[in-house]
Image: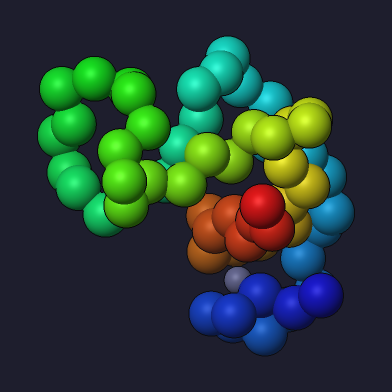
Length: 62
Ligand SMILES: [Zn+2]
């Protein structure tokens, strides 16, 4: 896979965290409860992700 920003090959790996890890369209959520528009990124294991160290970008599938 290549970086969507610079086009260089990006490194495969996984994101590790303490659950919940979620994506939300809202900034500054007061709680980490899953809202209607939120997406849990930890379902059945930590998500695989690709890293571009040059751009400091992470591309993950969930
Ligand atoms: Zn890059």
